[in-house]
Structures are given as structure tokens and as C-alpha cells.
Length: 254
Image 1 (cartoon, helix red, strand yellow):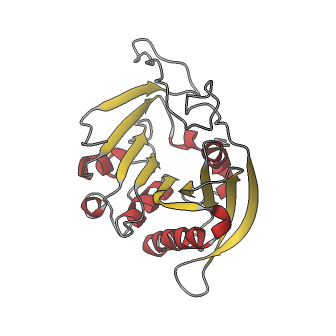
Image 2 (cartoon, rainbow, N blue to C red; image 1 turned 135 degrees about the horizontal axis):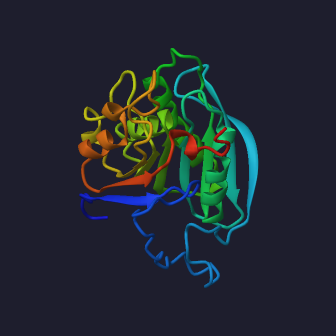
């Protein structure tokens, strides 16, 4: 992308019924998935051509004594591979995001899903964000993963979306960030304070169902995905999923 996209894509939530008058899904374009991919596999929403393996491990965090439990999904291709580091939502286990990791691995990404090195309501967002570059460094140092240092992305849901953006504001190795319904709660604030420091391409995907109402909205309007997009520099993309809920981005929405 060469410029910030000043529009909103409205799509129907896959888990619900498209309401009357909702936007009609446009035909998906064919995507060149590489010389090794079967010609029939051109839609990135479908599983890719690569088989993959999974392993669990512990990855050192940014500070001494910090370790992150992680699942690493590795495509069974020769590489070099793009890297995707996935951060979970607040108090969510990494197992809730394995479908994302497996899908990315089928498209030749090495995908790493971590648990945070600390838990509870008093977790330090900056310390958690500092661990993301440590995961990247660990992956680059493992020759068996064959990571392409120029194709590194961070991804995350809710708190994990904020963490992915906060990490990118300090680590120029991160070239792309995708945040699913990110929430800018607690210090340090990312939007707008840190967004100008992000050189990576940014995509924020969100919903408005949980922006208001109730005792404590999951994604308050003053802290939701729209705030990240408003403060993002080029290139950036915002998409709103109609009728979605904040927990529709996890593998087990119950």
C-alpha cells in the first residue's frame, strides 16, 4: 500500500446473518501465492498449499527471568519464511488463536503464538510489548525456522492488538501489524501518542457492538480500533465487521 486508505470497509460478520441493506461482499481477487502453490489455491481466505508442524516451547522475554510459553507453527517448506507473532487478548490463552497461526502457516508463514509472561489485572503493557521484539530475535536466531528478516509482522486481538502496535512503534524490524478489535486501555497509550512512530503498514479490524453500553464495554469508543486508525500514518487500513462482537475473534467465543 502506498497511502493511507481514507475509507471504511463494512463486511458482514461470518458468525451472524447479514442484515437487510448490508454491504454485499465483493468477489475476492485472485492472489499470486507463489510459483510453488497449486494454481487453484489463489484465495488467501482459504487454506494455503503448505503443510505444517507444531511445537510448544518457552521463549526468553526481554528481561532476565521472563519466559513466554509459546506455540510455534512451522510450514514444511524450504523458506525463507515470513514471520507472524500473535499476541492474545487480555486474560486469553494462546490456544484461542491457534486457527490464525495454522492458517498463516499454510500460506508459508512461521507463526508464533505466545502467552504473556505475567498475568492478572495489574499486568504491565510496556513490559509485555518489550517481549515481542525478544520473540522476533529468538525466531531470527533459530536457523531451522529460516525467517526472512524483511517480512516480519505482529498481530493480536484486543490487548494483543495494542501490544502488537506498541511493539511496532519501537522495533523497525516489524513491517506490518494487523490488530483485531484493539483496545487502547491503560498506560502507555498508543493512540495517538505512539502511532506516528510506527513505520509498518497497519490494518485495524473492528466492530461497534461493544463500543458503548453495559457496565464496562469491551471496546469503548474512545479506545477502540477507530482511534488507532485516526492516528495512523500511511499506509493504513481500517475495516468494520458489521454485527460482530468483541469476542468473535477467538476460536471459542463462548
